[in-house]
Image 1 (cartoon, rainbow, N blue to C red):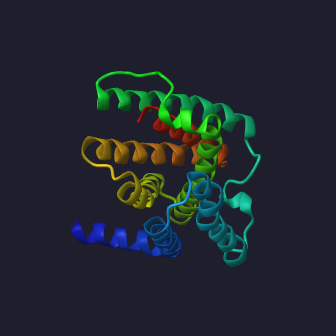
Image 2 (tube, rainbow, N blue to C red):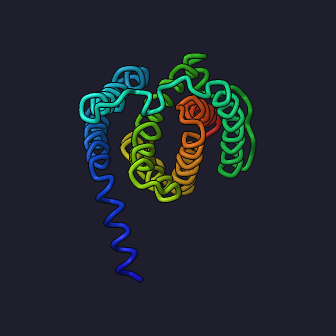
Image 3 (cartoon, one colour):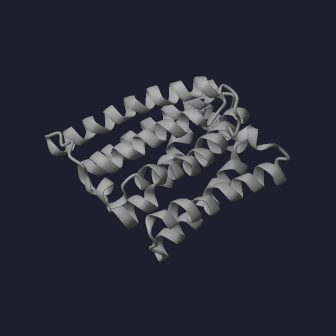
Length: 225
């Protein structure tokens, strides 16, 4: 039994090894950046993240794979369906974030929060930029390519979700320095977010729904957590 499991894992890993390599290089560069540099958040989200998360993947898809960007979810296919689904599931994740806030603080504060006071409506734009970069890399490329190669939804979803969570470790350890219950909640909700968005992507073939859900979640984290 152990041999069969080991063989299955080996075959799975071998099938997606080029994808691992792309992700590992991106994680390395992102970690180095997070360790050595501290710029305003708008610089991170509008300049640095697109350069690290989006441009290398777009280059890889176009030059190495010889494919178009619609193969990573940049498409208008199922636009309105994706829009409605994204808003619906986004509201669910917003409620999940509020629940996490209640579990952490044992009360529910709905007053204007520091993040919104600092950024105003710019918080929405920054959250959208974050969602676009991370969903392009993690759903459009990582999950999608793993799914294409393995044809196995559950393992692809789990692996993609783990890679998504690991991508946040530089931020967690070097910037936010989360610990205790907050750290556990962050890992758990990030995993659930990634898994749900993988399912949405698989069903719509578009990044619209995952980006909207991610946007709602980012806003909730900024305002309540």
